[in-house]
Image (cartoon, rainbow, N blue to C red; front, side, top):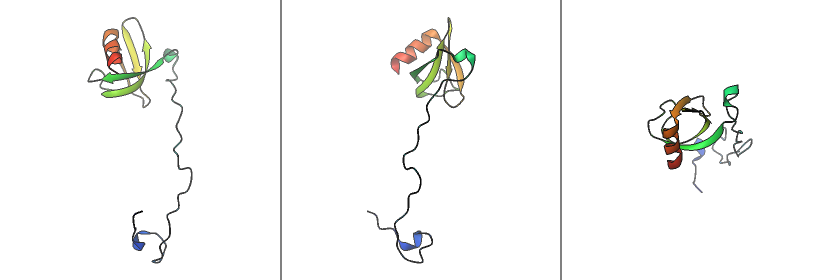
Length: 97
């Protein structure tokens, strides 16, 4: 264990005490839900490997909600970013991810 100097502890007047951890130590995970609009009913959560195809969502490995249409696949992430890809680009990005 690391030896922490006494002056770094609060309200101790030079006496070493152990730091107190309050509250729940484990962060609670929020259940990830699709967007609430009627358009997103039936959307699936997929892992995509994006380069620069959809700049509003970002690049790299991303978990997004995807709603497939005839020509376009509409995408939404958990932070409010929206975008669309054509079906062919989507299938290529899905295979890589």
